[in-house]
Length: 327
Image 1: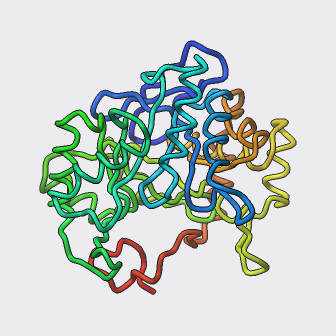
Image 2: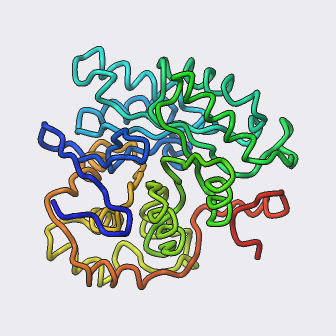
Image 3: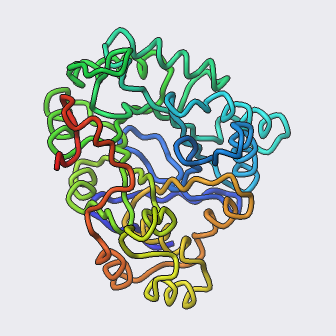
C-alpha cells in the first residue's frame, strides 16, 4: 500500500483479514479505518424504511467495513445499533473490532447538555461508548431551531468531559472552517482528532484539508461522490458518472467511476464516507484497496473543483458561527 499523501503522515496499519479497510492512527493514539459506511441524510429513499439502514449496516460489516458513521439528527442511531448488534450476535465481529462515529446536534451545545446528549445516543445505539464523537456543526440552535450563540469553546469543554468519562474514545468536530479550527486548537490546547466536512471532485477543499493535516487532524470526507451521483438535474456541475476522464481511469484500473472517486480521496489522505443501502454498491465501495492512482491522476481529478457544495444549508447563513460562504 502506498504512503498516503499530505503533510499529515499517516501510520497505515493493515488489518489481519483480507478485504478490511486499513487504519490510520489519530492524534490521540486510537486507530480509525480509512473508509466508513455513511448513514442518515440521503441514505434512504422515500420508498424505503429506516430498517434498510439496519440491513445496510449488517451488510457492510459482512463485507469488511469496520467504521460506521451516524448522527443524532439522522434519526437512525437505533437502526445502526441493531445492525451492529446483529453482526456481533452472529459472530462476524466483536465490539472492539468496530469503530462507531456519531455526532452532537446543534441544540445541545451548552456544556451541561453534551454528556446527556451522548448518553441518549448511546442508549439508541445500544452501546457503552462510541469511538468518535463529533460536534456536528459550529452553529448552535435553540430547541425550536432558532439561532443561539453558544461559543463552541464551551461545547468543546463538554466534549472533553464526555471523553474523560469514557463515553467517547476520541472527540472531534464537523464542518468547522480554518478560522474555527485554529481558534479551537489555540484556545483549548486540545486538538480535535477529526474534522469531518464535504470533499469531492467539485469541492476539493485543498486549503482546509491542508490546514487540518498540518495540525495532525484527520479529515473525514462526507458526500464523497459530489455531483458524480447527486446530479440534481441539468444544472449540476461536472463531472458526471459518464465523464470521459473518469471513465478512462475506471477502464484503466478495471474499476467503476465511483471507485475511482473514492480512491482519489484516499490518495489525498482522507477518510471517505460513502452512503448506500444497496448490497452490491456497499461491496463495491470498499473494493478500492487493490490499486492506486498516480500523483498526476489525483491532480487531474482535482481540476474538476468548482467550490460548489452538495450540502449547503443556506437557511443558516445569518446564524452566528456559520462556517460556509455567505453568498
